[in-house]
Every structure is written in C-alpha cells, then in structure tokens.
Amino acid sequence: MDADVIVVGGGPAGSTAAREIASRGHRVLLLDRADFPRDKACGGGVSMKTAALLPLDLSPVTERIATGVILGDPSTRMIPRDHDQPILYLTQRRRLDALLLDAAREAGVDIREGQHVQAVRRDAEGTYEVVARRDDTLTTYRARVVVGADGANSVVARDLGFGPPEERGVALEGNLPCPNGVPPWLEHRVLISFATVPGGYGWLFPKGDHVNVGVGGLVEAGPGLRTELARFTGLFGWDVEELRDVRATRCRSGAAAGAWRAAVRL
Image (cartoon, rainbow, N blue to C red):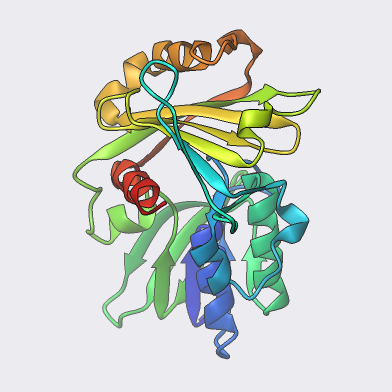
C-alpha cells in the first residue's frame, strides 16, 4: 500500500479532509492535477461558520472582511443589510488553497502535485488503485480508502459508479481592477443579485485591489453567460472589457440555492 487513504483533489475540501485524517495518525497521500499555487474561478468568500471549523489563522490570506451584504442590483432594488460583526472573510483561491494545502503538508500528508488522475478502480480484495499521469508517465497508487474531492467532473465519482449530479451549474467571472480602491459603498460588503440569470445569481466580492464580478446559473445558461456578465457589469457603470482574468467554471447547481439560503440568513 502506498497509503492508508488517498485523497484526490487538493482544493479546500480535499486538503482539509487530508489534514484531518493525517492528524489522527493515518498515512495520507493527496493527488492534484495542478502545481500550487494555482487559481480557481470562485468568489473567494469564507463564511464565519467555516472559518470557525478550521484550526488555522486565515488573516494572512484575508484581503477584506465583509460585515454586510447588498441584495439586488441597480436594475431592481438594492437592499443593504449591515451587521456589527464580520460575516465573511474575502480571499483569493490561489492564496487560500495554498495555505490549506501547506497545513495538510505540515500535518504529514504526502502531497503529489501535477498528478492528473486518469482512473480509479477497486480490486477483488477491496484495494483501490488510482492511476495518475504526469507528463508522459503513468503511476498507480494503492490504498484501502479513497476520498473523492475532485470537483463537479469527478473522476472518482465517475469510475466508482456514483455518477454526476442530476443538474450542473456554470459560472463566469472576472476581476475589475480598482487602483484607487474599491467603491466606498462596497468596501465592507458583498453584493448578491438573484435577478440576473434564471436559476442563478450575480455577485460582487471586493478584494484588496479589485472587485470579483461574476454570474452563474444552470448549465443551460452557459451560452448566454458572456452577455449576462456584460449586462450585469454595466449595471454598475463598469465596462466588461475592463475585467481581467475572465474565466468559466462548472459547479453543482445547488450552489445557487446555497447562496440564497445564506443571503436569507443574513
């Protein structure tokens, strides 16, 4: 056996699972296709509830702290809800994920970056074999337990028969540079609008020197997301051409429902 547990995926879920398992005395091998630090399409907000579960100090990667939320956008109505306590740490996935992965490494996790998992199978004796490729080299790793934390297009789920979620979501985001600082009305807030994409929402998440602007919805909205991103950006007087690092991602469609529940609680 190469490890007691193999974790596929080094994002927040994978690195946290690996760290927690290793801290209990198990040999853990974590595989990720990327070389860290790497970025991911994501608003980059960490809720206070999530932060409280982590035995880590997030301040080194926190660029702003949100104490309020704005519901809506200029096309409908903007309703601010402010609090006297933090509700969200605003960070960038490139920095947050690297921090969490380093914590897993410090806990004793054997981390192999640049390992693109090709297949996962289980033999007659119950041992899992994870086949990964780096460049032109294939390597097979073995363990008694496999944790699939490899996202919406999970190879682990596909090969072990769990199948994809019934519905998928898509999102498109970019970063608006703010060399003179983010708009004062957004400085300590995030904005979420549900009047943007059917089955989804738009968002503004301020960071240190930019605002993360995005729209997302059900997979059927994919072909029109660039148009929706341009429209949503224009509502605030910004030009979509000003956005940098524009990129798309697939996700579980339940993310929109989760954002709605969080906004209602706020």
